[in-house]
Amino acid sequence: MKPGFMVKTILTSLGLMAVFTPLSASAQIIPQPWVSVGSKDGDVTYSVGARALDIGAELGVGPNGATGVDVLKFLSLPYVSPYVGLGYYSDDKGVAVSGGVQLRATQNLFVGGGYNSVRGFNGQLGIRF
Image: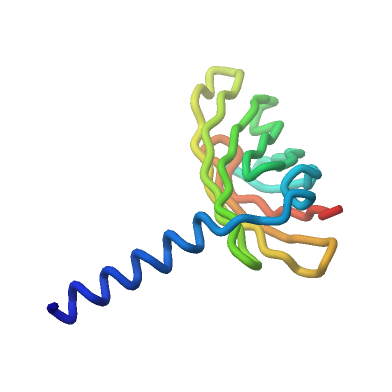
């Protein structure tokens, strides 16, 4: 076997193991809520969200009072959870894309940061039950 092929195979295997590693059932079912504050074009933006079973929803308020909902998909790794999402906003803002990461700060607290194409960059603070 070629060394390059072996390295690619090992990296792919480790990545798939991380993605498909099961979590404890109780940690998956209990929602994890958060609040978020950000900025876009000099306006302050807000949102609240929650996640369960690696799927999340976020209700946000963007510039000029545009409100909308984002649906998020999380990738649960041991201490970090990156996510991507799609949403829809009023006030002719249309479809929004988002992405970011949440980090476990303590046993019951997590922090995060992300970007939403309507609400801009934001910081997050949440609780794990």
